[in-house]
Length: 173
Image (cartoon, rainbow, N blue to C red):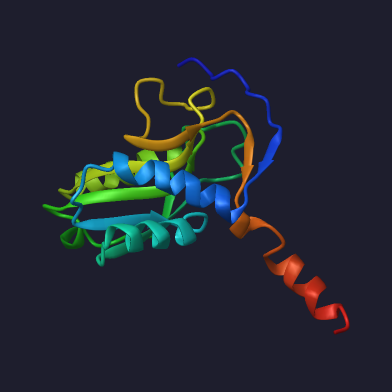
């Protein structure tokens, strides 16, 4: 297997308006109708909700996937599914798998594989696709709003989390 060439990692900070424009570009591509939307946590909870609302998909599921971090550059490690819908919830259904970004492609590819194994028909939609970083040269998301080589920071990732929360608690009103 050929290891992908490293892409530049300059950061791009998106606003809510930027996200709205990307979603507006993505939505007309989606073939639908989908029976369910499967959003990948955590980065896609906000995006998945926005897309489910825009497409009026009421059958919304979540998947949480974790890859071992101690293996360093071994990107072929088996993941742990921390949360995943039971097979009967997926079987015989068209499933729109949504994530914010396809970088290496491991997470989305793993989720799609598990949906297929359960008898579902998955298609992937992401806001950003990084083909230069993808480990899957012959595959990619079926739908994407933009191609990038940058490190994307979404508005729901800025100044949030335990560290930011603690800092806000300590500041006087």
